[in-house]
Amino acid sequence: MNMPIDIKICGLSKAESVAAALAGGASHVGFIFFAKSPRNVTPEKASELASGARGSAKIVAVTVDADDAFLDEIVATLKPDLLQLHGSESPERIREIKHRYGLPVMKAVSVREASDLDRIVAYRGIADRLLLDARPPAGADLPGGNGITFDWSLLGELDPDIDYMLSGGIDLANLASALHDVHPAGIDVSSGVERAPGEKDDDLIRRFLAEAKRLEGEMA
Image (cartoon, rainbow, N blue to C red; front, side, top):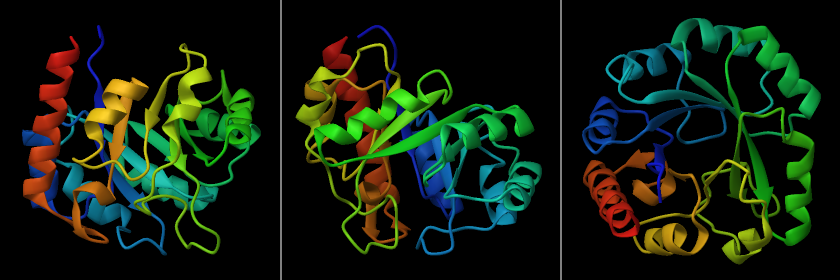
């Protein structure tokens, strides 16, 4: 594999966890702005947490169908490198957001069955990157971070030129499978490095990143 694999540690809410992610070589650190999430932070808190990451890892603001006013506040306060849209944002909405802020956008697409991948077509050439996540269970409050995987074999027919991060229930137990069997350009982990919803395990963050680096070395 020629390009380094991006590893995003998402849903960070404590300085110690951000430090663990940076020390382990995470390429992206994600902050969630969604009131229903146990990982929710304010723009001010995220800015404080991200201060040491700037220049070392890409700072990602994760939102769910946020309006312009809230996005204005997040962008002005956090100054993220990347916006991750994890709701039902249309391709037109993504165009508006990119024009308004001049920032790259990663669009999450929820997957459970092969037909879900058809949605990717609408976002190609508009979103800068995709995040393929497991579709949440019926009635779930969260669009992501539910600790469930989807059938990764569905991605076997995906156009290899599609740039995406793989998400959904990835942890130390299945990381090798995610890298060896799927070959994504990036891995996104949140619940897989937690001791409880919203409570990051800093040692687990370090171990996850070390294992990702080891596996990447095997694949080089």
